[in-house]
Image 1 (cartoon, one colour):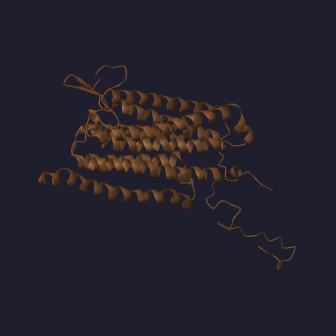
Image 2 (cartoon, each protein chain N blue to C red):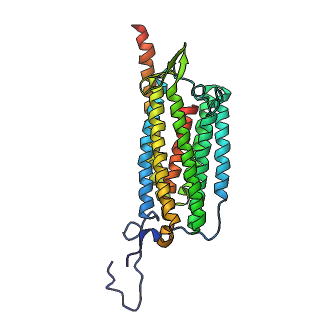
Image 3 (cartoon, chains in turn cyan, red):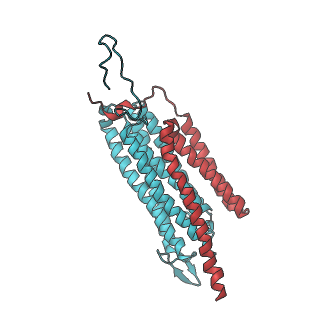
Length: 232
Length: 113
């Protein structure tokens, strides 16, 4: 903007308007904005998967009652407790989401020790969830015995219901599990950066907020997977 | 002078403020338990499914608005994030409708031949 008409003594401040450049109209840093945009696009991928799951369910008469398929828990023989272990996995992911929110909160107060502590708990929760999912996959693949013959589940066939039932189990929980895995890896990197004081020297803990956004999104997706695959 | 982008828009707190997260923990825990119980009750499909959808949206809203702090961002940003997602509702409607037709051609149409 040119100020040729004003005299030098008025010291007029140029009026700064959103969208004129130099400031972020969204009042948010570049990194966080791009993380949000990535999450929107990732939400589209998961929507695509869940909506095609809905298509498959609407077009099949013999879709199994899912709570009768997932009735076992680790280390217990023939437990027959429907959805208990999946519920526990959901609980673990919720807890790790809460500890991540607490890590972000501690980061905003520049409390290095507390941020590192809550980040550590979040990583533990992530590992617990991944382990549970590995067990559930193994259990699902092992299948069930029908007339004395063991039937295993694969991508194209399973003893529970239509072939697509197993396909969607592997693809949806697999895609989500891969997100959890990448989240744990990123969390570990940030945990190391916190512990070694890299973020403290930088003067802010915004990296914790960015990975926090990603981690909450993974939890958010699981909320939908839990409802649309296991409950409905 | 170039200032690091992150430093301008940084949100820093001086006091501990963890109440919404503890509250969120209890909400998510109880809603999840209620959801599992509702599923196992064996109520009519319509009632079960609408209750489950409602509770799921409640959980999702709490996570996005409180845990991800979208609630405290500018309204422009909230709209930029939420509006594209709403298109997925139309996508879902069209595909579930189409699933119904596929069901018809898979079971009813083939029974004529």
